Image 1 (cartoon, helix red, strand yellow):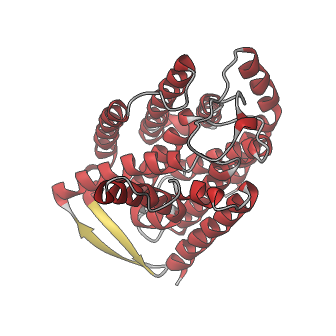
Image 2 (tube, rainbow, N blue to C red):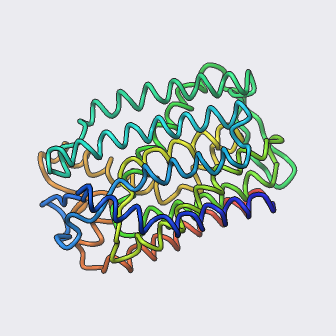
Image 3 (cartoon, rainbow, N blue to C red):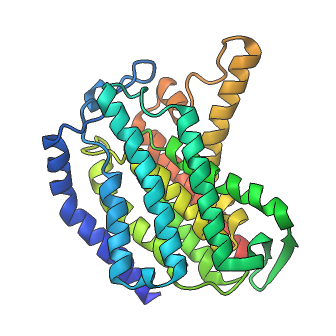
Length: 328
């Protein structure tokens, strides 16, 4: 536990120290956010430095390398997944900058194809690490008992869904100042607590090191990303962090609890799915004013900060429920 606390504090401290320089460098390079016209009026956020996720991901890897987390195959594979998704997100961010339009990054089809390839690589790497144990789902029942279900080959589409789904769900929630950083920090701390209970299998400490460092970096980033934001994370951060936490949950066999911890992200994703489906069924009508649902509340008149704090509260509730579930 002391190691995890030290990792958290080191990553938090470095982020706090370096982020002003990162922001200045992004401004000098004119890497600024473009605002879409069909949503809430955020004109004041135009040209706010973005793509800070590249720095945060690299910082996560450097801190873990310094603390020896990458000496194991587990650490190397998860780091490769983190960097791979970061590169995908960076390409999307840079495409938007190239076209000077927030809606003209990589196409949805292109992103999904690359995400699928990355997910297949991740599943192959995780299988190499875990062997046959990978296909077994653990359902905790209290603090000392877990019901086990071996899905066999059916686990692979399930694992694929977990990785791709988490990557996109976390990315969708990066839409308001401080929303993603706060929610994900809460999810990371909840994931550390659930993994630490050891109710499913004995897991290496390196698995808890990833969410500890990510949480430290994001809370440091939140200092600058809180409303009004001085910098944005970009897809390079949100896509990669979601996929990484999903892989950590698979390795620790807490996939289902990770889904509960990520309850707000699941709701955000479902709101988009409902919006798209309703739009197609009704021939152009919208169920929400805008999706993801945090933008719906904005258009209903709630202030951005109130929405963010309330979403944090709901995220905290999901994490507490998850922790209590394994402590029963």
